[in-house]
Each structure stands twice: as C-alpha cells, then as structure tokens.
Amino acid sequence: MSSDPREQGCARNGGDTPCNPTRRRMLAAGAGLLGLSVAPGVFLMQAGATSDAGTATGASPRVRWGLLIDTTRCAEGCDACVRACREENGWAHLGQAPTDAQWIRKVTVSDPDTGHSQSLPVMCQHCAHPPCVQVCPTGASMQRADGIVQVDKHLCIGCRYCMMACPYKARSFVHEPVTEFSPNSPRGKGTVESCHLCVHRIDRGQLPACVTRCASEGGGAMVFGDLNDPDSDISQALSRHGGRAIRQDLGLNPGVRYQGI
Image (tube, one colour):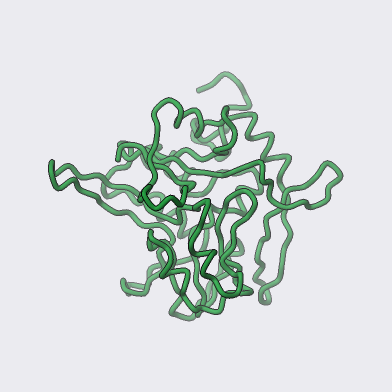
C-alpha cells in the first residue's frame, strides 16, 4: 500500500475513490448535485459540476469518463460487477430471462480458430457518437458533456428505437411494474434504461460501483478515469498496454475499452 495517505483510500488499495490525486481533486472540485423530483420520494439526480462560486455549471466538456477492462483478470463465473450494479441502482432479475433488466451482463467470447475463450462484462459503451441518442425522438436518450450517455426518465416514451440502434444490446426495457426504487436511479414501467456509469457517484468524486466491487471481490479488472487526462490511471494503462473497443469497425469511439481481446 502506498505511504501517501491520500492514496490509502483509493481503489487500488481497496478503497472507493480514484487513485490518481490529480483526478480526485478534479472530481472533488466538480462535485455537485441537483435533485429533480420524478415522483413522490423518487428523485432524478442531475449531474453538475460546481464552480468556485458554488454555481452549478454542468458536466465539463474537458473531461471524458471511460472504463478500461482487463479481461485477463476477469474470471468466468465472477459476477461481482453485476451484483454491485444491481444493488447500487435498484434493478433485479425476476427470473424472466427474456424481459429481465440487464444494465451489465457477463458474456463469454471464443476464438473459433483456437478455442480460447474469455469472460468479460458488457454494459453501455458510452460512445462518443451514440446511435441511441441520434434516433431518440424525444431527446430522452442524451449524452452529457463529459461523455456519459444516459436516459432522461421524464422524457422517455418507451418507443425502444434506442434499443434497436444500440449495437451492443446494452439497453433494457422495463416490462414489469417497479415497486422498489433506489434513490440513485429512478425506474418505471414502460421506459428504457441502461448503465450510466453510476453518474451520481462520479459527481460525488467516487468510482462506479462495479469498479469498486471488482477491486474488492473480483480480479481488479476495471480501471475508471478521464480519457482526456494523460496522467490519469486509465490513460497511463492504455498508453502502456493498449486497449480495444468492441466493434471498433463501427467508428462509434466507445468510452469503454478492453485489454486481452
């Protein structure tokens, strides 16, 4: 463990915050939340940075949040990231596989030539050019200035065009009545939902729940950070070892990259 007390609570050492002090300071400076009421007792947390004067200024376009996943550290059968996402955002499997919510899922890919297979998590890839946003007729499918793609539940009419447009099948439609909510992620029958990188945690200077849980219970396969910051952990890891996007040929420039595939 690092001797630097600022590093002792970071994800690399089993903590809940980014390990790069520069990024952590930036996150702290950018923390800001504005609660919007969706229904009694349920709030949509709108992300926003806070200026020195304390005025909400919105997500910064200088930042692009991303996720790097080392598949060589991702064990088949481990679902720590899936459980963390489910608990943090209040979605559950109802035992109805065709219609159950699926913000993040584990898949196994195989090389037909060698027979080698790998297990990896797939979630919204937070594309720089998200087709889900382009096809949405109401603007519910939206992209923040910092690259996070999410669904505005106020505006979603459940047409599911975004689900058809997503090449990663990363979105779910809520088929069943929702009776239990997480204050972090309001949900409702007849709307579409997907991974939003735990935007509520990011705006508090914390890591996404899947990243934290992977570090403590999984193989430490996930690195989260600012792709625009050359000194961030994720940029340094990509610089040293590289990384690939799924369906790179589509030219969508996803914010989620993988190593070992």
